[in-house]
Image (cartoon, rainbow, N blue to C red; front, side, top):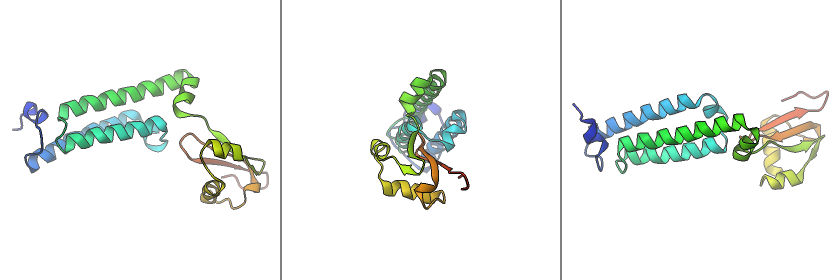
Length: 166
């Protein structure tokens, strides 16, 4: 039987069994964390989601390879997930806080005209915008009533009357 105290304080992988146990424990931690973050955490990644993924990935990697003990890694992941949940709650409670953390959607096309100042603000050029439009099946920006660059980096497109909305 594996002693959890011994597993938690290991300085490095001593064998295949230890590696399997470490990764299995960390897999459960990640799975629970993702489930607790809800569907939003999977499908609509924003700035806070990206930071959480990077931080948790780093901690999990350290624990999997034995440079961080497993119980410390679990505590760190729990803290990160708690901070992420608190940030999401505060963003819902105070929309201005949410905008500060996640940003706001930006109008990049209005009545068929590309808004270059908005593109510059978002560090995007016309070619990148046209690539996103083509991904939505739009070849000509002049057919677009409005296009919004959303906080998660996706493009929402509304076509002019007589055109098919995307």
